[in-house]
Structures are given as structure tokens and as C-alpha cells.
Length: 102
Image (cartoon, rainbow, N blue to C red; front, side):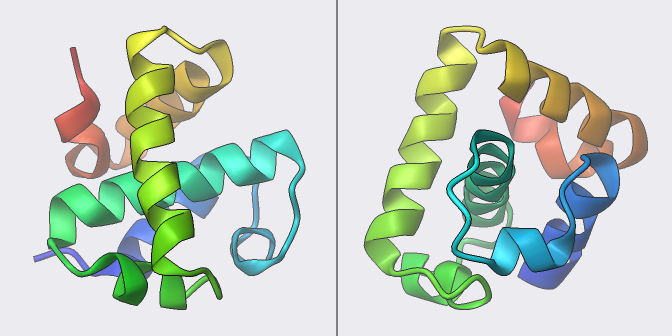
């Protein structure tokens, strides 16, 4: 089973966002999008609680819940930035984003 740390590292390794940035309070769009992608993947792959998933980034369960639903919403609307990130993660870590493939 994949862990939340492995997912966080895979997202950071596949995007231009560092782990430290994912854990930061930054609201820059690319950072928040990558963080929300981590929330979504961690929720679907680990089945951990929202609070536990957010803990690694210093976020509340509400932030994780919002991130999970935001990624689902953006993916359905074919958001360009999210699609690019998912494509990059899929190249190196297909098991991390398999739940998002259409």
C-alpha cells in the first residue's frame, strides 16, 4: 500500500513544486493545485481520514475535503494545469493517478 509521504514525494518529483512548497502556506496557483492533487490522490489511495492526510501539510480536514472535490471538479472540466500535472505524474508514477484517468 502506498503512503501519504510517497504520494507527496511523487507529486513533488513529477511537478515543478518542491515538497517544502507543498507543505507551505503558499496560495500560488501551481502550488495549491499540486497540493490539492496530493490531497485527492492520498484520499483515493490510502483511505485515510481527511485530517490525517492534511496533517503532513499543516492543513485541516476541511482544506483536504475542498482539495479532493476541487481536483474532481477541475478534472471534469479539463483544466489545463491539472491535466498537465496529472500527465507528468502518470509518466513516472502511473499508480498514483490511475483513479483519475478517463
